[in-house]
Amino acid sequence: MNRLTDLLHIDCPIIQGGMGNISHAQLTASISEAGGLGTFGVGTFPADHVRMELARIKELTDRPFCVNIPIRVQPDVKEMIRLVLDLKVPVVSLSAGNPKPIIPILKEAGVTVMVVTASVKQAVKAEEAGADIIVAEGYEAAGINSNDETTTMTLIPQIADAVSVPVAAAGGIGDGRGVAAALCLGAEGVQMGTRFIATKEALVHEAYKKKLLESSDVDTIIVGRSVGKIRRLVKTPYAALLAEVEKEGTTLEEFDTIADEASHIRGALEGKLAEGHINGGQIAGLIRDVPTVKELLNLMMEQYRTVIEGLNQNVKR
Image 1: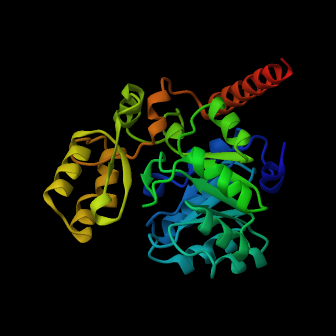
Image 2: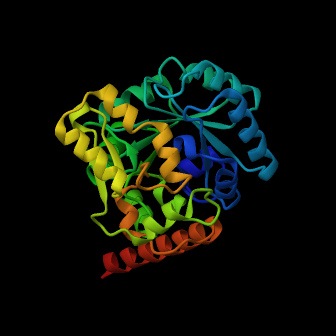
């Protein structure tokens, strides 16, 4: 289809976001099997768990998949690199930290490297360091976001102009119209997280999926601005608690103890929405069903083609 799909050896230009400590083999493999690029996020997982999940992915699919390493989050980055090299993972995405020292190690082993960025400066540096693909993420996205708060629609064309490697757009994309818009802005693919949560293969609590289905355009909230750690969550009782704690005044250390991975597990996997948070991008307001991954990707690509055909007809007029 384009340079991005050729580099990744995938059928449609849709990539799964990392998802941190709620990432699992079933969803990753299902996305790859459906023609996209499934991604397993190592989060703060220990090496034994990551090895087990990656082996499981290889049992479920022989299609390419990706491993996301959040550099400042994962306690043992060196071990994660050893794992992906030992298991011959074809694609690695690097986020939340400086990728420069890591990229040459991966490239020497023949790994395709994607780097998640939130500014033109970061994107240019990533390309100079050897990144094959830039994932440009706007602050519409779920989870931890850039303090710059740059939106996807403004970020993508600027980064596409600044780098020569393929760009994937992330943040605020959940259907075929979003794919078409991203490609019109200069991207060659998209990365999604929230939309993949609302699929049958996603092993999260049903309360999480139900909350996404009920969400409107204004049902996400930003917390963490005052401590320099922006995180976009779905509005829940726990998210309201985080906002109130921040309003009253808190330190980064105090905030991290409340909005830690344990609270994310309680919300996302245990469905305790008054005791834990759930990440959600602004695209949540578009989610109205819970299809299989294959149904979702097929529908998105069909919708994308319809939009592009309509644009072509409008231009001809």
